[in-house]
Amino acid sequence: MKKKKSVFNTKKTRTYQLIILGFLLLILFGALLLMLPVANNAHMHTEFVDALFTSVSATCVTGLVVKDTAIHWSMFGQLVILIMIQIGGMGVVTITMAFIALSGKQIGLWERSTMQESIGAPRIRGIVRLTSFIIKTSFFIELIGACLLFPQFLKDVGPLKAVWYSIFHSISAFCNAGFDLMGIRGPFSSFTSYQGNYYVNIVIMSLIVIGGIGFVTWDDIKTNKLRFKHYSIQSKIILVTSLLLIFVPALFLFVFEFRSLPLPERIISSLFQSVTTRTAGFNTADLNMMDESGSLLMIILMLIGGSPGSTAGGMKTTTIAVLFLSALTVFNKKNDVEAVNRRLSEDTVRSAGAILFIYLVFFITGAIIISKVEDLPLITCLFETASAIGTVGLTLGITSFLSVPSKIVLMILMFFGRIGCLTIIYAAVPADSNNNARLPLEKVAIG
Image 1 (tube, rainbow, N blue to C red):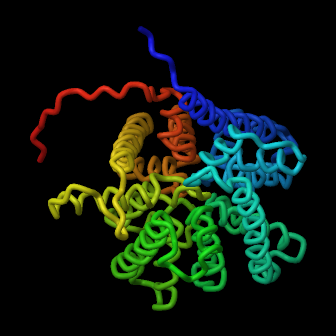
Image 2 (cartoon, rainbow, N blue to C red):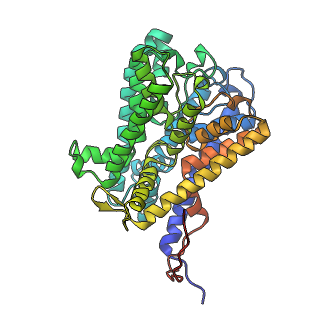
Image 3 (cartoon, rainbow, N blue to C red):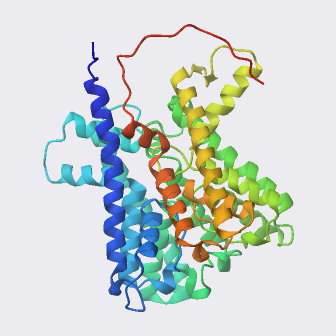
């Protein structure tokens, strides 16, 4: 007898498909706008592959670019890029549902479920309130960031440009996008001219961290204030893991990579590169001057990325934390994976392992393809593909010189990294909840 598919699973599949479709439509529409002569300073048509690459990078809040944002794109083109960054960072579904709510239409159960999956909320209850909180808080933080950056840009580029630069970089930093307008000081230079500017470094780092810890964690902080013990286990894991992933790599960079800098600059540069490497994509240092150990560390950080339900991409901090806790369980010969006096579900542990495996396969395969196509060193290509799949935007300077096949590989990785591997898999292969039969148990030797 043929089994009936679960209605619940069908709705979940539709939810994942909607999220993917929303991103694809935004990417295509953005690419068409960027192809227009009005979108670039030369007032000529931009090639479709370059417009598409830029649109994918902006929507997936990555920051890898084949055309310098300040030099090639006009004010109109930069505005299109910024809108895609904003929508891509907060989530296409989140923005769409917010407009539906503002129009006064009733938001049904399926719409609420879609919003839950889009922002990574643990439950459907209170999802409309949470979405409203996310949008209001995001705009408020971006406004504060722009106001803080304005005095510095006022001195550097004058009053009119200062307003635009402040808004653009505040949104780009908060959404962990890595797009910048610093090409006026040198093509693809990012924030290298501000390496010794502690004020700009601190503002940008703060925006990156706030955007990268996740919307649900913000809500937890808002609700429970400084009472850490009342936070959810997810928020506790995110905050602890994020702090470790900021300061431990920063210590490594301080000791081994930035030894030629004066002590204050050495400290701020180490912190900035540690923060920005996990999906933000700005840089204040010349990455080509780092040795292979530093590059490898940055590759690992780029793959980890930010936290679930945030503006950041990557495998996510919770994935790495769960895998680490799972390893500790094996070492301590325990049966259950535990964290903060709680037991984690087997499904969570299995999903973390699957995510790690899939990311590594895509990341390594993409690097091998680009290395062969472009005849480039593998470590350089691994850095590039880690940056793409982690939606980071850092590069060792090869992005703008890549051929079309390599650009396509990076576009696929950027999209994959932003949407998430499980979202894509669940959209394509719906689970059959009625298949509850269990096969006979057998052991296989490991290690």
